[in-house]
Image (cartoon, rainbow, N blue to C red; front, side, top):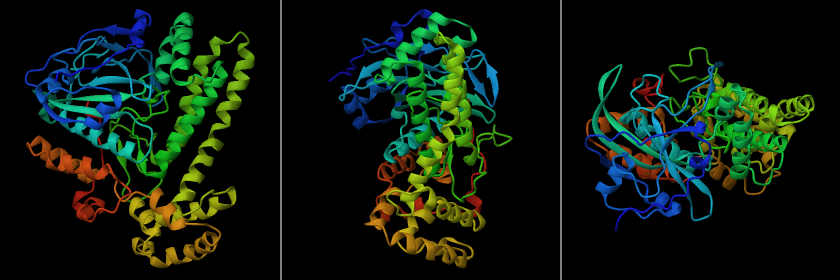
Length: 473
């Protein structure tokens, strides 16, 4: 049976200045690394054989109905505004309506140069492709909104980076859309009000159909982003490049570059090699997303007849965002310590635990996982630090029903630990994809006890610690 994708490409029907139409650049010898059959079924895709899948998702063969294009957008990168960025190494192959009637993008990352490449080669090497496959699918299994990995394909061509020639690869990823804060900034910077109105209406209809006005869309987008970042914090995730061009208005996590999950907990943890000043450190993410949504609000102001009133209303909405983030964070961390509905009075209990974890170099994931097992004190270099907190926690739990079950469901046993991801990449570059397959399989069930995979739950040995992660561009 041949590959069949039922495309319905709404973004390609927008005006030409929203994108550049072009086909992906063919590669020399595409070979399928992995295809996500479950996701394909969800999308209504009928898969073909491995060779056909490799050809299509490497960009060598366009399936019927595809309308490939590179999207235009701008963005603040580490606080500095770039008026033109765009898809410099990616192609939106097209859109489908999935089995639930939701519109989804199919996007090829590493598909070759585009008019937005800024002299780049438009390619990706295998390491970042496999990292994004593993981490995005792990995030999905954790219940966190995210782009998904549909396929990974080796290109058979080298990609040249600082380390020299590395094996090339392409990721086929799926998202509710790739409309970003930076997409709005692109047209706002050009004072292209017609395009801004068109983009707003397209985005409203696609992602906020219950909203009628720019203010309603802004408030709904703020709520999605507040919840998303709180979810990141609850699993120790650090995005690494929270630029406005990486902030998707769908409320999904996209663009997994130098992302990482913390091992040892500390609130100022940074992994990204390009984040020299910690702008996107773990504990800064809640502040940065507020700043990003302020940029989105600024883009919406010209859509209003009374712009002064809009500025006042939007300012109130953005200023209220930190409280929304904290409410979601408190709820999620409350569940992690067994509370069904954590209140403001519970915040000191949560924050005290986190401070003691930081002081005692506790593993973030394993400490929370150990709470319901009753051996969390073993995670502390000074176990008496846990004992001092435990008595107040036990007293608070006395009012809760089924706290053990709640903690088991809120605290994963398995995350994509940095050292395991790096070991997986090293093996794959050498031709061994077994560690990659194992990670994908285990991380699909992060809350299950999997005794055969206990090694994947262990923190890194000192020689295995990954201190820096990289974009791969």
